[in-house]
Length: 360
Image 1 (cartoon, rainbow, N blue to C red):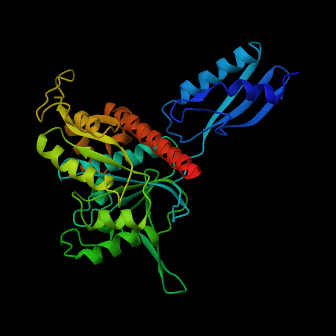
Image 2: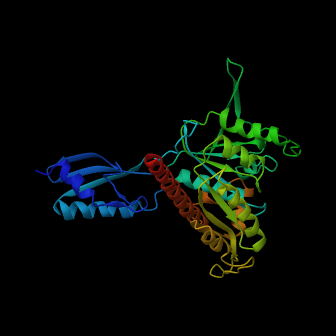
């Protein structure tokens, strides 16, 4: 008779490629059922966006065949349980990811929106906060101009805000509460209070990932978030030219300061090249080449991917239907790959954090 111990012993030879430990030690194997020559079990991945899902499943099948029996019929349920940051005060939000840039105009909001939607398309529960107080763009990019979230007065006098839901994610933006035709002339303390309210006064439900679209630069909002909430990490968006790279370095430097110490999940190069619609095979590097890759290498950070300068991306945002929602677009596939890499880096960062805490 084949036993659960034999199955676990075989699967202890399968290593999680990112975490460098075997699946059994990581408690990633559950629900083992043995019925004659049929074996089924679940592999609990660290994220539904795991880019190594097929590799791990194939390794499990090979291990069972090699160490137990090739005659077994193996059924594997590849599921996930997103890991959570340590010391996260918002119990219902597992991971907060900020999307930042050193300067404006590099497509940071476009990346934040499509990253959030791509993570949701993998099966994760996702929220998106537009923390760019002075230039909120989320309402436009989701076709929600003029929309207002529902707000309910609680018995204790506090107000509970219910985020707007669209395309499978939950959204809040200061743009939902202000006149789009009027500037927001707020000083630092008012800005910090407003951003905290988007986190604390909203009913977000249970979220695997909260994506935060930060304003350009390194100002009050950045400091407020890093001091008030542990962040799973920062994604840096840049374009290839030197002026953008120079400002991006300042943003990275802020996250790496000892007093802040936010993990750098990686670099995304936007507007990497131009491809005309009539010449889809041609690439014109009008802003320079490989600037984002060099930046990632300089800080020993993952290079998450490059996004070309294509009119369809901006047109989709202006129309309120982000490009990742178009399953036929190659850009949708590109953002899905970036989302998987981001989720992968979050899982690695959380594992390293837990190991460090255990040692200390």
